[in-house]
Length: 107
Length: 118
Image (tube, rainbow over all chains, first blue to last red; front, side):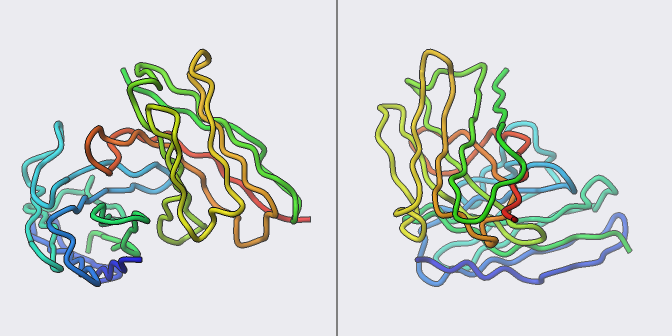
């Protein structure tokens, strides 16, 4: 199975700041990577697919980048509604696997 | 619009079988694939399996021996059955639409919490 190592596990940042969340795959996943946002008590929502494509309706302050085994999610101008846990997911190989999550809080 | 909604028992006894239903609207199961994904309390997500638009299935090898996914297209329902439940199967169970020609998920149900306990 492809292991997805996500960092940091938790993050505290101020409103308006830029934050980065990293995801490291145990092998090359050829940009077959998605990012999800999960707010407390809710189901995950798709933010990014194919490593850098923004899902319809997602604010442009979210962006994804990376290739090979290293990927990142960037959130510009942090807003209060961005408080959530963020997960990466690889879909290059079965079984599909997720990162362990990054919990983002406002400082 | 596309909606998925999970239903099922909130409490299951150890060693028993879990049966869940995912009822979809706004999409056809004959042209869409649906997955089950679960999340233990406070933990990450685990992909369980998929039922393809043609009715075929694929499962996570870690739980394949205990899992069965089926559907009733006339009722727009997808079913999950998992046997020999243990306490570690306690989780929120989600169904989600598999994006066509890819393997990520663009619509998710609200989830159903299942507790395995005597």
